[in-house]
Length: 535
Image 1 (cartoon, one colour):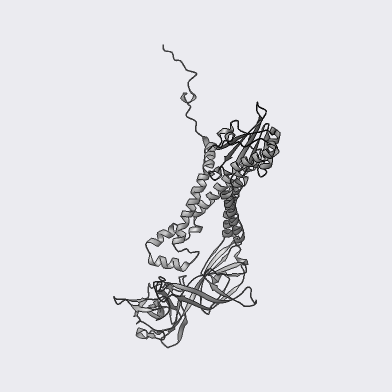
Image 2: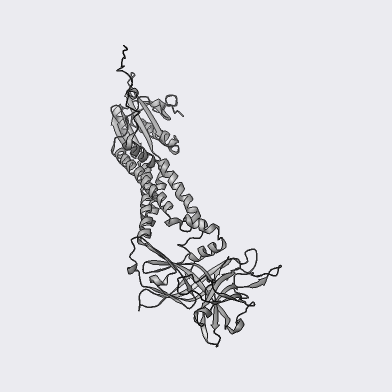
């Protein structure tokens, strides 16, 4: 027969049927909340927000210019789909950027609100009691006086009139510089307000892009936009019904020196009305000088060329006659690509399409290739590739692309000057390069939170200035009657920041207090041998 004994004093985790106890769901939630609302996490999220914005400043964005995104995609056919997969052409509306934005807002709120409550309690609280040993403070001074301790403390209160003073038996404690922490709290609350204002502008506003050729107009309606990005809570049925007409556009470029080809100015003369039937007003639209109309801002983003073509069918009838916007490849020479679609030439299998290249200042390279040597239209030329067949106009398609599947090539044109006509083979018709116009790309931005965003940004600057220039500091004065009948005065000062660590102000307080007491009745209150300043 065997016997066993059980140790009732064994640790709980060693008992049969029991495992180690963890934090549990509530504990893990508290831990996650503490990590999220720490200032370190807020700084990391703010850094990630800034890093996340870098692609938005380097890569073209759909919200700014769909044309530039299209051109980038055409030049980088392998890379562009991957960038689009990660929303790098729509950085500021991407899910990952919104997640960082939301986490930063929660982190700041969880960090700043408790800090503000703590500061509010500190402002209402009494200054801290006087330390027992004032000589250990960064600044300490002693001197003797014949004035009574009550007189010393009363004079000290007058000297420290800019401080919040509290009496403690034989001493007084004084503090000042509360606005530093108030500025810190104000700065962070302003950041929260700025985040809210930016989010409100995104939810309740809208942005739209359009392209406007010289002589054409635009009505602020949804079908008139090339691309539009409304906020989630924006009522697009109630947008302002203003109209814009592009009267003239002029781009000037530097012609000499190392900066040859650089843009000197972009100026668009426009006529607009704020409502149907309203008076016509004029505005000179320039870069960084938007038009404000009916609560919206109209910005000039860019420009390009729109060659004019006249397409005739086999019988000589005009089937197409208008300017066609071409998208530039680069701004160095403004070599531009575009397509011309003439669906009214004949039957579907006889429709005409052309892929063209526009050269504002045509010139040959040393290798004999044709290029543009200057962005201004000094020597405009056009080359075309013709196709015949079904354009596929029954399906939605980009106006900047030609679907050549199922179409028959009809050849390449010669280099065409203004007025040249290319007679197509087999009597298919002709196309004339009739001239060119210029176009501008515009963005309409409706953001009702612009003023709140400006106010919160200004408030953040004010809070930051308070944080930088206000110096929190404490001063203690103790007055005790000595055995010889004289009053021993101790004064100590503490700067709560490095900037406040300068002892010059504390020395001035000591000198002023000693001078006041000497004027009362003192034989030599500030005897150098009896006054000490440490560190």
